[in-house]
Length: 151
Image (cartoon, rainbow, N blue to C red; front, side, top):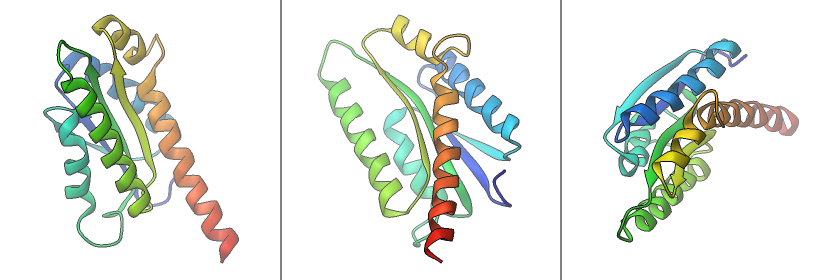
């Protein structure tokens, strides 16, 4: 179990039903692990990195969070907007994770169609929200294990 700290779940709400599915999967994993969490909603995936940065602050720490789960979906459209959003959001989230030593579960779906996204988000489908929460919890544990090993 994660100690006193809790996990932040940041959910992009552009596709409301997909966000609900992703959150349901992530919440179930965190609840089962006994990990307290709080949720923050943002309009879309582009806003995920900024919201996480707001939450963890400008200092060198993680704002009191043991880890973060970023959830959302980008679906390919008729322009190259999809490519820019996917690339920049992924890069910004990776940068935050590495620069701040922040365990981060990446649950941003990047799909060609709504139907693909629905299957990946659904708790009864690929359940990528759960996968992101599990990845966050594992990275929290790995950070702790490596800190103990180097002490």
